[in-house]
Image (cartoon, rainbow, N blue to C red; front, side, top):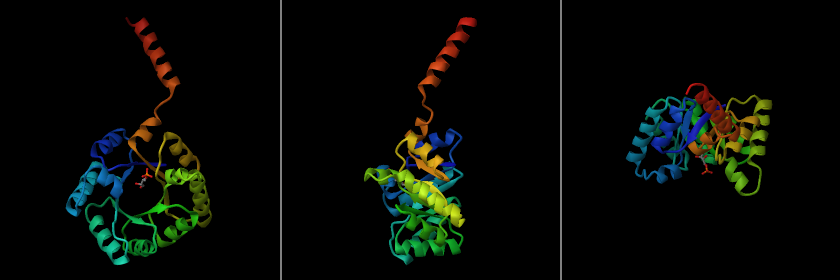
Length: 218
Ligand code: E4P
């Protein structure tokens, strides 16, 4: 399973990259806004900076919602760097645009996915990645992880190539459950990634090993 970090914060991206396990980055307009990045020029130059920090795929989201606008914006974003993936919302015009990008060799990430039916449409259109938002499904008392499992089953039966990118991850447990249920990629905040490190027995065990070493090597 690949690990993407879900942020537009350059320090977090560098920290995740320095762990040596980072495969890519996802962003969205809210994450860009959180970093205070506004205006087309600044947004595009920020994507350029991100794409230079990591060698893996970097999802850059379009704002347009009509076919022509999505295609124009996507072409501009894809031209920023070879590792830019155009992130397109799961809407009718988005599906048309994903088909166009797929036919024209531009990678895509179909975002805001909440059902297996939407996942089938995105795969048929040739999306490179599919982003089901598991945390937001949990937020309304449904089960985000079941959605990952259902999509993974459908994709396996149908032999679709689209990679399932479990998004809206809120905890280390989400990461493990996404892995168990067939996600090809998880995208999460750095805090959730670092949360995987934690186990009290690791801390207790390390403390004991170091104390014993000190006793024997004082
Ligand atoms: C996915 O690519 C989105 O950027 C993200 O995972 C959304 O997460 P949120 O529901 O925590 O905003």
